[in-house]
Length: 244
Image (cartoon, rainbow, N blue to C red; front, side, top):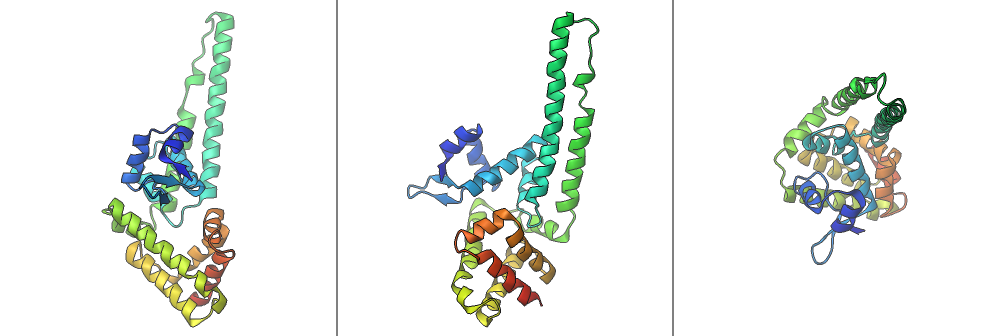
């Protein structure tokens, strides 16, 4: 676990900025010390990295928050898009460096300005922004999520996430009973109701998608299984039985 000061040194973000991210619910610590100091895990830092990638694309903080909190957010796809953009930026910088070297050698004869053209970069950024809006901004669930959480305070987010963690961890005591047991199926219903009451209407179709994400998304799978090996797979299996 890292303190806010350590995260600040690691990322270059000011402590004040990290506090601001916490205040608006964009980037929150997963734990607090006994003295009340923020503590950040490796999973937290993965989220922060995503936030900084989106900032590179000039996404407003409010939109970044909505995107990364969306259950449909595809971290791998986002990273692929980020990589494409960074390669484009790198190539542009290499051209500018070459232009400087050439200009120095030729003493500014036959000056070139094409290397300063950012139209291609802007085109890629717009494409990515449009894609993100298409993926995460048009679904009914996403719009409902935005509406329900629009006025959430810092305490609301903290309590909601805490309650969600409790429900997930309660699945551990049910593993020995099996995914099809009445108790386990009741727990799936409890989880589904929680999502509907706090975030968006969780249909069976959405619930199946979430279960699939728990085992296919490395971040979710690792986060679940660190509490109990096989927890993600167990919950997914229980959800499949429930939805059938």
